[in-house]
Length: 272
Image 1 (tube, rainbow, N blue to C red):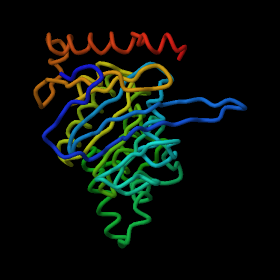
Image 2 (spheres, helix red, strand yellow):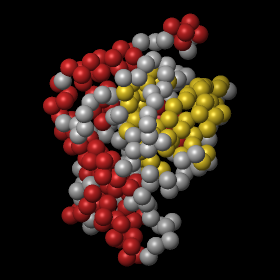
Image 3 (tube, one colour):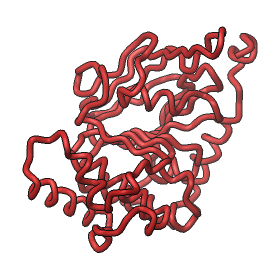
Image 4 (spheres, rainbow, N blue to C red):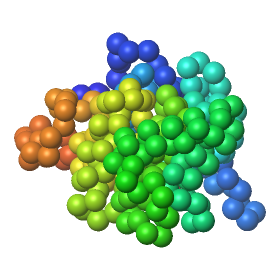
């Protein structure tokens, strides 16, 4: 396990780096500091989750990493290159599926490949390849309205994987799903991560989910969000459902719950 306030070392190369990242927003005439001086890295093929109280800046952190927002100060790097906007090196999956209702399942995945210099046949082949990965090849000609929530999220994952990113950024992707679908999607994501050798930054409010999926879990403080704990998840892989009742799992869950619900003294004194 990691120690509070320290980055956990790894023998893998860093794929994603966040360096002294701060993000400030204007709300009316006021300025709101969402995240403040955040530093961490994610190694190649590592799965890192971020948890924290509501409004702590978890989603802000991800949108900056995705290149959808510019940082106020600091930077995000992928393979040593500074992120200056959206890029094919990063796939992004949000809680909202954001599928085009007028396109079929296959059409939605192919739509993500429109900027690639490949022919129609190759676009179709890649789309079907990823739909096979997420178990939806039999629904290629269906429309989003004909799918369940879990199936729509599978389409969103297939779309994000279609242009073969090395980093997958996910913002509470299973937050709207029921417990059974959530468990199914967690298993699917674990398999996709292992098969594609992806680096994953995963935002969630669910502590059980964070422990079950991750190699490490970062805990953010209340706004302005800062990293207050970096915890290594010492559970064997592959992860199995019965692990969630093990002493190690429950101890990690309890530790993270305490960290999330405890306001740092210096934050309380500053009124943050």
